[in-house]
Length: 315
Image (cartoon, rainbow, N blue to C red; front, side):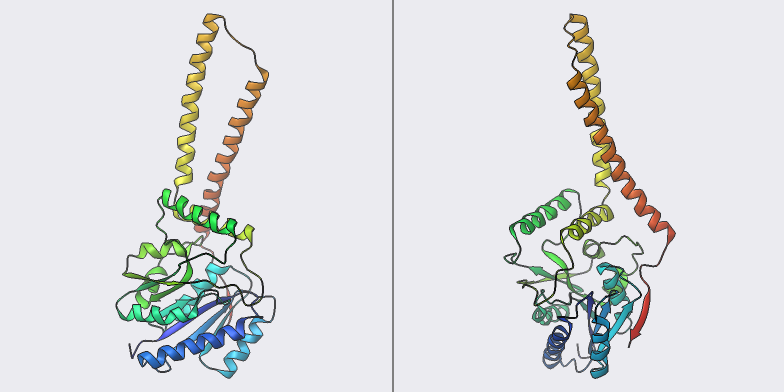
């Protein structure tokens, strides 16, 4: 442990209101770990500015100027939270032996990083930060979150419930993760696939100190859909099953129509015909939309465009 280096990666987008206090808190946590584990000064913080439109980058520059343990990486524009995490891990793994990722608002408990480092010292390559309650969430968010985890499990996706992107990973775990080249990436769904020894640290999530959430309902729904389509083809299989059932139903209706015609009991119904047409048409449109989503993701992958563009690095 004495030779291990810890880097805390902090993705930040328009976090000027909380960034300074958050960095001071993380530095204090690192000092605490250093005192307990003889880590010395082999610990730093890497803040990834995801194309912020406020004064986030200026604050990072000032923090770096006053403390060399604070480093910065700036995107040329907003590329998204997942890309910011990957960029931070890609840079940090060059020198760090263990990497912690945590959001800049510190709603995830930074004091639990101490327990994560202890779990790493005990041999865990991946330590998940897991919420042990969702009291701070609204009823709607709490219910939909639990439903989402259950849905993913039914679709065959291995996911750690109530875990977001607060975790510690060893150097070899990060290097293995970075070998996954896909652009449409859902990090919390890929980490369990690495197969390394894991541990869990439980904590209570707190409200934001200031500022606004970067994940309103629209982004949350889009993120959830990305998680499903990035990790499983179950929706396409469900379309196949639905199409097969529709065909079987159609065969049954043909037999029924023939029998009714033979018995002279045919009933002419415009309403039932139109309902059937609208239903089948709706199913077809939904099916095309789902398939189109996968084709769109494939198109993005085969172009091999970079995940992000780094404008500036403060090292």
